Image 1 (cartoon, rainbow, N blue to C red):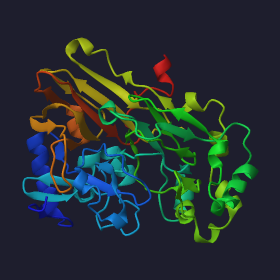
Image 2: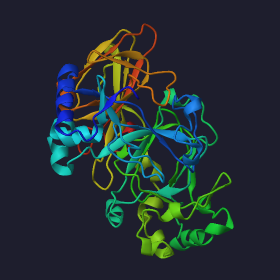
Image 3: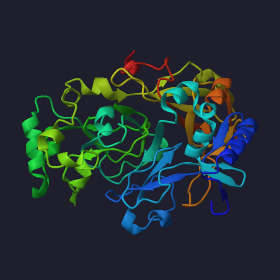
Image 4: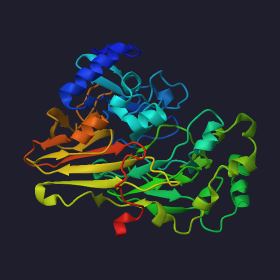
Length: 418
């Protein structure tokens, strides 16, 4: 990476490089790995990052436990470096952020509908990988986040088998609150913040996590993600509020509860409780309304490949994002057409994508370039992307996520039961 010429903020120069690359690749931009640390968590060691580079940002910043994909969203970390969370495009010996590429090329990259409504690529995805659970927390809604100049954050989970050969310390996730829980009980947990464990998990229920499945998680919904490595398509925001004061013996600062709430409300317990979507949190049919299992897009197994929906469904009547998992058998070539732009990560195997190298590395150094991640434009996706598995023994597996309201043909929630 250090040998590349950085074109960030180069304006029209970026546009020329992007257009040239898209013409050569049929609508693809190669992306470099984007690593993000979290100071309050313990990395799970399943990102394929070299162990010597776990603390590449410095031990004071915490270990790297996330890799972000096709991201134009900055990570909201204290002490962050200037480009933390931003994906870089690589064209020859040049590099520039995907955010600058989108700014320069607009609808050419994200599609006319997304560009006209949002003026950016409004979503991103990540691998989220920890040794243990993280605090019971929520992500603010669009309306709540606006109070502090941010955007809300609905998100989703898929647990790729290739990154979950071990479950680590606690492969269970607490979701919401038990039916019948009262706001007074949650308020009491906040009052007990500095007494040790504030007991909020006593009011919740944990679900065992299963590789190859997932969940759809709306804003204002409490969740304490477990220790499976998770693929997370989500809205392009990094807002959250932690409602649990102690996790595996580690104290959670009050600041992480209120960081994305108006300053004058930082000690207003009633306001903090009311940040939660109460109906969604105490839903007695929670699993039916949030749990995901893969659904084949079409019956193509006899042709040597299977494309499956892994993230689908709507939140508050809106499709914020969707995702698919493509598996191509050894020696098979297929053309996959989609309705919108997407970010792609290869999780297993080797082959080509529109003739460009595509493979999942076994180990990655912090500054190393890979051949496992691409961004595909809407026009490239509609024309069709050709995947070829060049292995004679191993499947080629790729995950790709899409922006808002792209896939009108996606299944409804609980569609896997049909």
